[in-house]
Image (cartoon, rainbow, N blue to C red; front, top):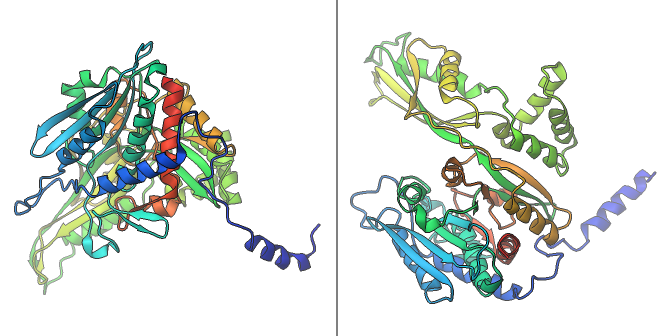
Length: 488
C-alpha cells in the first residue's frame, strides 16, 4: 500500500505528464483517405457555411429585409460544391421565400442494396450580438476553436458529411448502394423542411434503408474520447400553457385571490414535480453502458442498480433520487417539464385579472401527453389555474433498432478509431428531423460527429458556439468510415 508521504509526489508527477491528444486516431487511415486534406476541407467548408446567415427566427421582423431561414443561399453553395462531380446528381427544392432543401445522390455503379441517407439542417437559431465575443456569422478561430453560429448545430456536421461524401465519390465503383445527402430547411421551426421532403419529394430520397442524422454526441472526458452516444430515439416536444384568472383591482387594495399569486404557486409546484420513471430499450442500454465510464462512484453504482432491478424498494427509490439529482440523467429517466415563459399585468399599480405561464414539456416515447397535463393540473392544485396542451397530441415514433448494418458500422468505426471508447444508444432530449423519418419507418441514427467536451456541447443554441478545429478531421473520417462500411 502506498504511504501517505508518497501521495503529493505522485500528484506532482501526474501533473507534469504530457496531456493526452483526444483526437489521435488509433487505426491507420482508410485506403485512399487523406487525413490532412479531409481536415483542411472540412474546416474550409465550415467557414463558408457559417458565413451564410441562415437564422430561423420563426416570426421574422417585417422590417428585416433578410428572408427567414435563407436556406436557398446555402443550397446553392452545396450545389456549387457538387455540380459536375462524376456520379452525383443534385436537386434544389425551392419552397419559396428564400427557403430551400438540397439533395445530392451519389449513384453506385452496380447497386445491390437500398440507399443510405445522410443529412443535417441548414438553418440556425438566432444570436445575441451583444453577448458574443466574436461575430456569429463570420467564423473566427481562437485558441484551437472555430467560433460561429452553427459550428456544431448543424453546419459542423454538414461540413464533415460533405467531405466524406466527396471522398466516397472517388470510390463510386466499389459501392453497393447509393448514398443520398440531404440538407434540410426549417429544422429549428417550421414545416418546409423534412416534412415537405417526405410528403412531396420522397422520390428524391430514394427509399433509404436507414439514415444518419444529427442528435448524438461524441464526448471527450479526461483528455480522451470516452463515449460515442448514438441517438436511436428522442423525446416528443410539446408546450403546455397555464392560465390563471381572478378579480382585478387597484394595487392599493391587496386581494387574497390574486391571479398572479395563484399562478406562481401552481407553477412552482409543477416545476418541482417529477413525472414517473419510464425506461425503454434505449435508456436501459444507455445507463448500463454509461456506468462503464461514469467517474462518480455513487452515480456509477446507482446506474448499475437501476439496470439490475425495477422494483419499488426503498433502495431503488434512493437510486432514482441520486440519478434524478443530475439534470442530464433526470431528463433521460422521465418526461420533463421546463418553465420557459411567464406573463401578466400591464401596470405596476393594477392587479391583473389574468396571467399565463408556458412549460416546454419533453415526453418520453410511450408517455401520454394528455395524462401528463392531467398530472400538472392535479399537482398545480389551484382552482383558478388551468393547464392546457397547446396543439394536438402526436404519436411517438418507434426507436431505431441497434442491430442494423448502419448502427453496427457506427459502432465499429468508433472502436477502430478509439479502441477504449464505449458506444452508447442514446435518447435525445431535444427534437431533430430524425423523428419524422422514424415515423415513416426509416431507422435513423443521430450523431454529432465532432468529439467535444460537455461544456462545449452546452453552447449549442447559446452564446459563443464553437467547434474544436482538431475535431473536424476526426468527424469527417468517422462519417467516411461509417459510409464505406455500410455502402462499400
